[in-house]
Image (tube, rainbow, N blue to C red):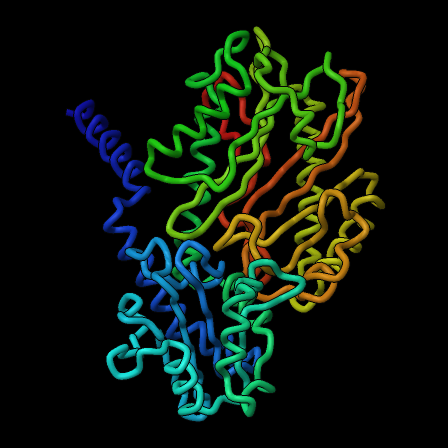
Length: 448
């Protein structure tokens, strides 16, 4: 009886794990519920904070504004014809109107405000809506520094300004800050979902870096990459970039920068004694992950990784700590970068930090903390003028160079994990790697 009970428990656990990825109809329900929460509760606060009482977004089918794309209901994969959205915030009445200058409602959240039979001209109807509400500011999505906030194309901008009465033209401002805040800010429910996304991401990496996928002496790095890509497809998910897997070993020199993809050797056969590294992320429920982890391929007779590799990983974790303890509300990306690099170098480390916002997009909008080729700071954009805000998610992406006498060379410990900065400070969304994954897996070894 006990044996059957244990089998039943194992069966239930397997099914619970499979249920991590929802079927399409359930996903649509969750997406639309989260979107409703964002429109009704988050958006009014963001409009107040950025002092914009009317936000106008204009897109045409297959050429969508990146912000507008995040506002479409689950059953809309693209905008339709020309889609114009108008959000009007009346702070004194604590109300927000969500209108579409379109022939039909945009899902259940945004109401159609255009009867083409009464007013055939879409631009004239938009102007009527503006004049009826007489906003103080009209925010449009144009921006020099934030690509995601620069989604209004030249044609639509020109037509909008041509149709807008002169008395309102001086009210037009960039909605850059509002657009960035909309993209970067996560809600409570989204963070519950985010934990599951990162868990799925970790699970796929753990399976890829295991004896189930890798046979030392046979399997190549390219084969592991395509296995990861296929796994994502088989789960009914998507990835926003092609996975990469690379090798560092005693007989190979460290050549090129870690992001010189054109120089990355392809099809390397995985061998015992290799230090493997992957860069991998998924897209699910309109959120994205971005993760880099490390694995060691055991040599015959080994039951754990060499101590010098374990200590190297600890150095990588130390760089993470220097960075995350400097993430304070109101600091710019450049300020966080400079302080973190200084402290890490003072501790004898050789760090490089290139942490980016993560969320609605993989390389999302928000506070950029360095780039791999801009370790002195990012000029003229969010690294210089955009401060860290609460309720935001980041890919804590960095590396540290470690000299390994046993291999007579330097290696790079490259790490990346999703982290959340909230009202109570920083935390990892779903933990971070503090132990090397082992291939083959050793019983009782966690690896994360």
